[in-house]
Image (tube, rainbow, N blue to C red):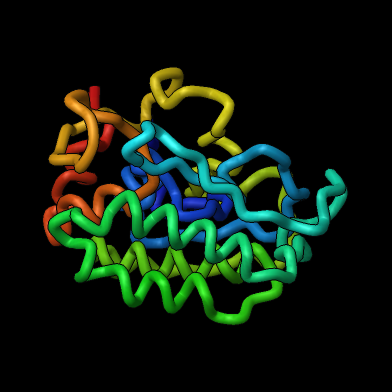
Length: 213
């Protein structure tokens, strides 16, 4: 459950999940941790989408994989091949979605913009997604690493982990919406699934997805 804190401190992820956005939507002040050590096999460089072949993971390749590398210093692999692969997969999965044309051009442009660091790419994509769900928090990035967050702050660094299912946490409660593939709703995919399928209704669906006891 989310506390009554006024400020959120959280790690920055790649095209984050609905669980991530259901948390962000509850705060008007969000600080993104850039001085943490890079965590392998995490949402920081991967997301999950729905395709004709089922759930597929998109992974952003990085060159710095040492556990002692700060996230802000993690470099992207210097090639457009992975961008082509990501975009072809997204296009194949969602080109028939109701709102694909509404978001596709802007998302593609951001993905292909020259960018050297994973953090910078994730920040650009997060800003786009926040604008698309019509949530405009005050965004900031950390200037140093603090072991313990100070003040009225909800510290959720590494709280949303790819290796642990969302059902083990109490942040997100799935609200089904129309999806392109399959007869059974797939919860907690990347927010791009929700945007392409639900469009302007994405923000309301996320609000209804906030876990409340």
